[in-house]
Image 1 (cartoon, rainbow, N blue to C red):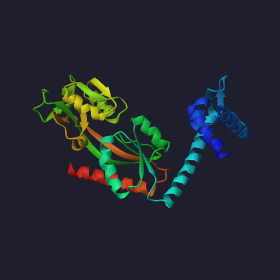
Image 2: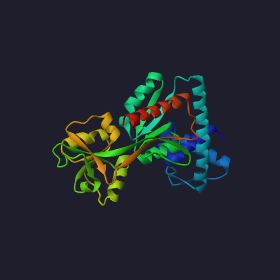
Image 3: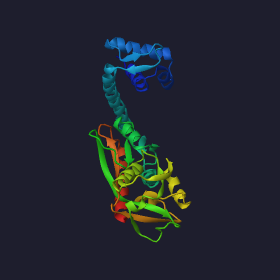
Image 4: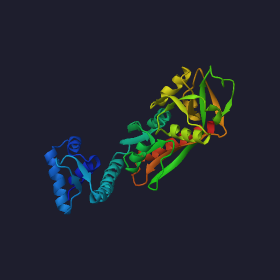
Length: 298
C-alpha cells in the first residue's frame, strides 16, 4: 500500500466521481483508475460500487470505513509536515481561518501582523455548517464564529458574549425609544442574512420564542449590505453590539432588545489533534487579548 494510493483514494472517495477526481489531481482518468484498482487488489476488497461507465462511484460500507482510517492517517502525516516546518522556520507559515464574523478580522490581523509580518493567511467566510465540516476535518487552524463550533474532538474558547440590538432608520416609529420588546417587532419587515449564518439562525430562534416568524424584505450573504438597506428604509435589522463599535452607523438608531434580552456567543474553535504552531499559539493569544479589550470597553 502506497501513500499516493491513499491520497488518490481520499479524493475519489470524497467526490465519488472518477473524472472530477482526475481533474482535481491533475492526472489522467486511466492512471487514477488503475491506482484505485491496485489499492483494492492490495486490500483484497472492493471499496466502491461502480456504475456501468465506471466514472460514477459510490463508496460501499467497507469503503466508508476505510476512508475514516485513511483520513486519520493522512491527517497525522500532514500534521507532521506542519510541525517540521514550524520547528525549522518559526517566523513563516500560513494560518487557515474560517469565519462568519469577518468584520472583526481587520483589527485582529493588524495586531498580529505587527508581531509576525511573515505569516500568511487563508481566510474563508462560511456559513455555520460549512465551518463545522472544515474544522472537524482539520482543514483550518481556527474557526471564529457565532454560534461557537462545538464537538468532542474540538477545543473552543468563548471569547465574547454580547447583546443583539435592532437598528431602525431615523424615520421609524421607534426612533425616539431606547429599547423595545422583541414581540413588538412582529409586524416589521427585516433585512437579514440568509439561513445558515449564525446571527440569522439565532434571531430566528429568539423570534420564534417571542411568537412570530420574521418577514424578510431582503436576504443576503454579505453583512456589510444590511446597514445601508436599513438606512434606505427597506427594513430593520438585528446587529451585534460589537458591530456598532467596529462600524459607526449614521442615519440609523439602535435599540436595546428586552423581553428577552438577546445574547450571542462568539467562539474560537480548533481541532484537538491539529498541531498548534508557534504562530497559531501567538494568533490565539492576540484574539483572546483583543476580545478582552472589547469586553472591558463595553
